[in-house]
Image (cartoon, rainbow, N blue to C red; front, top):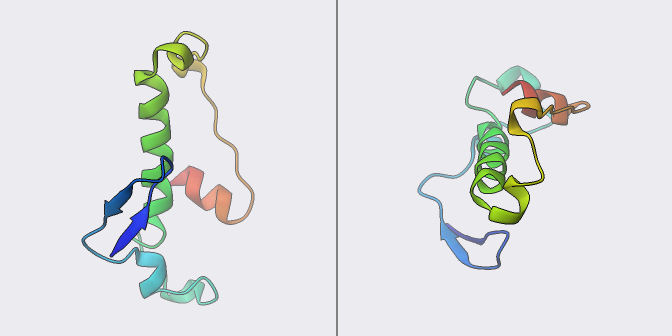
Length: 78
């Protein structure tokens, strides 16, 4: 599967995200892997901040807090 990333480059994903294997509307079918791609996205964002010279100087990653509601809360817990 090819999808554009945040910089509009194409990124290849080997497997479809778990959200496609267990639909949002069927939470009983969710597992530890369901929507894990959302948590991976958050990790990638924090890593990008740490490696960006302008942002790293402005953000204290030791004091970073994440908050989410509903699926966003599930993402943060992930």
